[in-house]
Length: 165
Image (cartoon, rainbow, N blue to C red):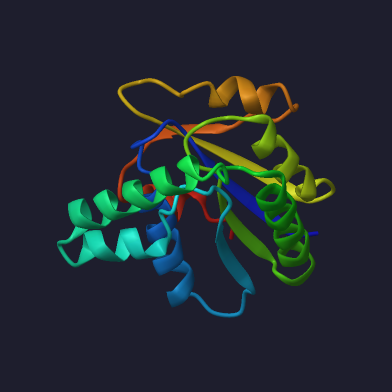
């Protein structure tokens, strides 16, 4: 059984930065098969976290927003094909890896529920990052699925606290 940590929370709560912090910690660790996957079509991959570390965060976020809007305008944001592909990717990753970090993006949705269904039978750790004390509906999303999320605001020590030993 794999462990999957799902990152969720409202837009700009720090999910991408936390995902980057987790990636850096995992890169330095040994002996564990892991993978970090963006499960949202918002175009904010690991490259945005890397850009922040290089002092180019605002530029990267503007570019990601531009691509996100293009995807939305084309009608492909959370399309059935995207959801099916991401669910299949998650199923495969959970067969291979001991730990998967999945970034669900900023808006709880039926599409997210479909994607996380791939984690049935695995240990699921939902994380809700808050922004200005708001959770964007994510706490209810997780509780409706019988899961009690870890709720926190982003801080640099959070990644180390979340990783199972």
